[in-house]
Image 1: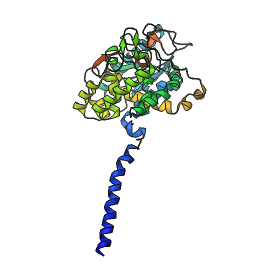
Image 2: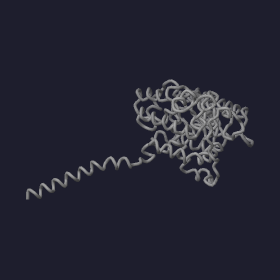
Image 3: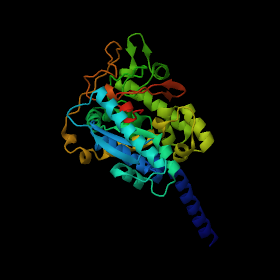
Image 4: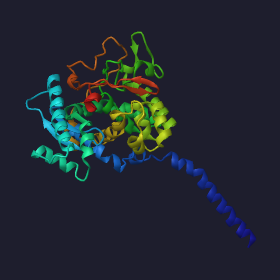
Length: 371
């Protein structure tokens, strides 16, 4: 009897030992779902939906006047008459016209006057239940966003050519392949992109940050090489994650900088929603607050690209070329590239690590036009 109990006890110990041995194997083989790695908090959903519409529904002749903080509070989608890419003068006129129109209406309502006409009546519906002071605050918080449908379609086509090699690099680095879609909101996957501040290539590294991960000297500039710059981006993102502990913060740090997000985390905790709502640190403005929501929107559009742009999967992607020479780099202002539209460009400052930088403006600044 005792020998039987010893045998059972031995078998039980062996079973649990096997479980302990196998657990690391099971977890190492586990690939977390994108929704686990890149959560979509309910509070961010309106922002994500806003950017999905900017990327897929609004044309470059559409101008959306909205609240800077509550981006889903849209006053009007104004379609500029005519055809083709608007000129800089067109963009400036639309921006000034819409801001003046809605600032005037908001200030009139803030003074306590009753809504008059369809514009003010529409605004009053948006502010139902809010005090008159809300109108006055909103009048100083207007922003105009130009649509990006045509440009984002080109981004999707270019991405087809780069995704296979980028995903292999990120898998080898142990990173989620979804991160390879960050260039969608950085450069539009345009390998020769260059900002006026010197941020270069698909991943938009500045010279200072790039030198930490790549060779940049003389006529050689690895920022222009899709493979080497992707490897560098993987290292930077991995570093961000090791410091910040989750991907929403690590992704935002690609825009705002690791140090900046460390500071935000120390004040507001490690929840990005809380940081977006509460943090008012230096340079943590519209771009940084919306960067993760834009990334989530880009993920959604890439995942369902044929739904948003029927037939796009059949389009031939350009063959990626490896470039290491700086002499032929095109400025992001160069107008022949369809993804570039200088009329909607604005200067913006960001940080890679601790280094201040300006990202590729032909796409990103259109997406976050400072108005």
